Length: 367
Image: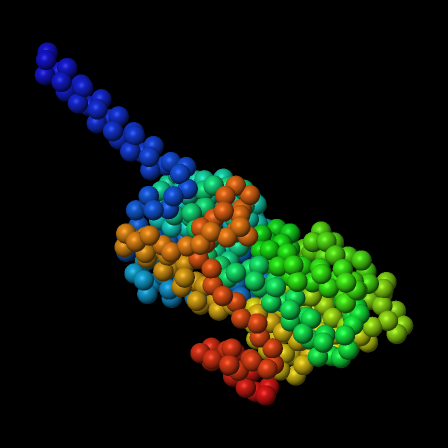
């Protein structure tokens, strides 16, 4: 009888320990260092639809970085026709497959709360990549270029280009921003307005349309056709006749080219137009003076930074991160690995793209 009692107590203790172990593993601590990752484990990478060259390049960059580091890769893109539910399903599938880290370039950073909570509960490390994931404590790390700095660089490029164009102003300009479902879009815009608003206030810049808030200038889905349509409408309403359009703040290269298509069709030639991502289609335009600037954010380096972080965790190291208020996701400031963006114009393109054979070749061809 005594043996049965002892055996029963032992079983109860073992069961209790097992349950407490499961509870601790699934805790909502938001601390990636609790997760167990080892070489050979599955790393899931969920990316948005291939709406820009940057996203297309990301998949190949991740595959190489993950495999070179000794992990297994599960890389998936969301479908352009239904990006949010598709990405939600993909992340859930990665968790089911046993991914020990889930790296997410969010299609919509505000609609992944349940998925990242499930990932954390499974014991996986959750890394927001390129775009922050909003309104959740269940994001361990954020890997991206300094996006506020991107906006500041774009704004300063616009001002420099306008000055090079001649005179001290006032200059007639219009503002474009990215998609509201991308957490980066507001950060880019806020960074730009940190530089531009004082110039609007002192009269150096005149936004003829009066549209200066993010809500007014956003471009749904980052779609080129939406930017082109808005630019066409702005020209029709505010720039008839001899009214000049001196410059346009564009948040990326895809939209910059769409804006330039609209201005050319309307006979508003040679406005100063900014960009971002160093897309191959924009490099010749920069070299011939059609598009004034872009931002170089090396996708390979950005993917590698995320995998280096995972490798550090697997090696028992504490990843080196920063706390930046611009990486506040609404619940917490997500510890970040921030890379430095580079402003590129015709003057520094060859130097900026050294080491990137394709971009350097395009820049040299346009010298």
